[in-house]
Image (tube, rainbow, N blue to C red; front, side, top):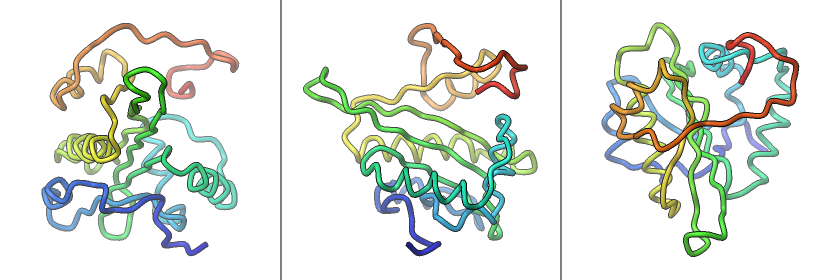
Length: 176
């Protein structure tokens, strides 16, 4: 498999959203060769990553690629570096006429590029993916500190998030 192989077709991202990015910033699907472009540097703004080798990255990428119709990991690239990430995971349901529900995950923008509207544009790109894939809704979990950002993106509080962790208790940064 080629290192420039995208995880999914870029045509699923709205062209209007793609064109709305500032000059020099590109939104696109995650590629198999993105390990060396700062992908984990970007994700580490969000949470603890651990020690993930390039082989580990490729193994997980290949697993996601094999699960067709499920994983839509998207990145923002600037000057050949990954400066933003976001994922849409599509859940196939029995309810809602065997509908699809999108789950937004791992929204992260590097510190030096925060405040430029890239997070909002990432959410818009993931929402466009969900619409183009036939999802009837997107949902996400966030802490109270991030709620105003997601409200600005068009999301509303629709309940309470519950978690049952199966790992040793850690501080917030090291706990997903």
